[in-house]
Image 1 (tube, one colour):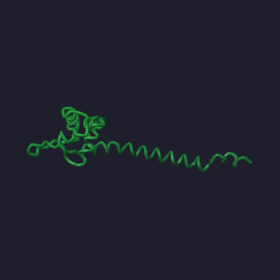
Image 2 (cartoon, rainbow, N blue to C red):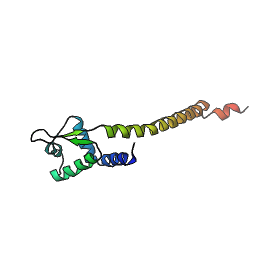
Image 3 (cartoon, rainbow, N blue to C red):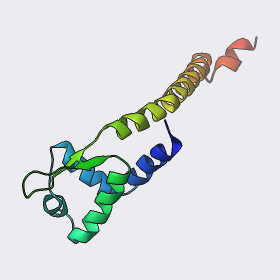
Length: 118
């Protein structure tokens, strides 16, 4: 996976407005007007966000008569999830080691030193 594609994906996801747009597009395609409706933002402002999402490959725009609907493209999200999955296994292993250590400490208990003393 190209680093610049991953960088563009994470940069696009860094903005809450763009994440909200993607969440809306998860429900189905929508026009710029429909996507702008829930935001206190102009259509040109929404269009800027859409261009960032489009450059990252997270959305595509089609043509349906007079409409130009936007739709969610999931491949970049899948690539980001694959990249993050490597770190997930690292953290899972770290938590398992911590659980084992805490289990040993709990098994020894606070009175363990007193029990060992004759």
